[in-house]
Image 1 (cartoon, rainbow over the protein chains, first blue to last red):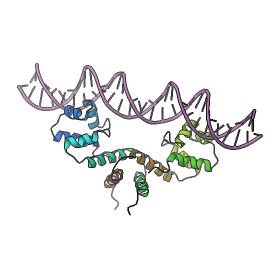
Image 2 (image 1 turned 135 degrees about the horizontal axis):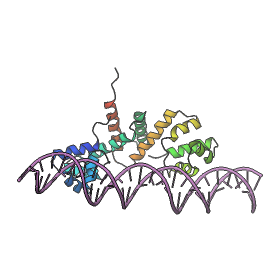
Image 3 (image 1 turned 180 degrees about the vertical axis):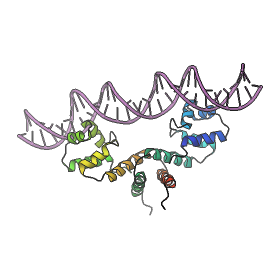
Image 4 (image 1 turned 90 degrees about the vertical axis):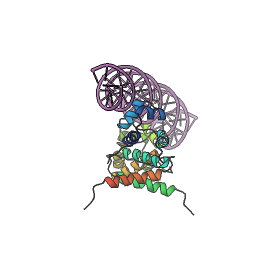
Length: 102
Length: 102
DNA sequence: TTTTTTCTTGACGATATTGTCAAAAGTAAA
DNA sequence: TTTACTTTTGACAATATCGTCAAGAAAAAA
């Protein structure tokens, strides 16, 4: 299930840009060791980093946020049975409570 | 979005059964104040309580687990934009990595 | 209204998670 | 190799979350 994490995804972007950890960490306003750990999956990226990352790498902020949230969700239901069903129920709950169009 | 929480759901079950907090807490092996807080949404139910709750109230354990996980997920994406899209992406990711039938 | 039982609350210790510092390890250039 | 730079790591402080205790508030029974 866990092929590419958000952390390794960032690492890929950063390396492709030839940018050192130190610089990206500065842009994100975090310690470089924290970023190192995020990229090696010893820590988790925080919500606030997402728009900054989008800006730095010229990505669509919305898409990146969705990717980030999705990974959070997947992490939460990792090695749970019926995770898929839980996702579906969550979806239904959102849809049910969403204001109806027309 | 948040109409009935897992906590208030438990409270409903417990009251319907005419069971005092104290007794249910004992069955769950937690302090009654913890259960009180869970039922009033000041704390979150833990994963381990779910099968015990199912047993106590004669519910389907799988369904209750799904309900529990679903709420966890919804809590995580509360007041996030594009939460629904994140859910869908998570689903796709699971489906994509699921072993194909046939 | 007293008494008993149930429920809630605030404070606090225990636990888990996070971010940082400083040093070590790894890599590349000179 | 030295030297300079990048990345990783371990230890620890800061923060957040959690469960319990003990007392108080609320409710029900007597």
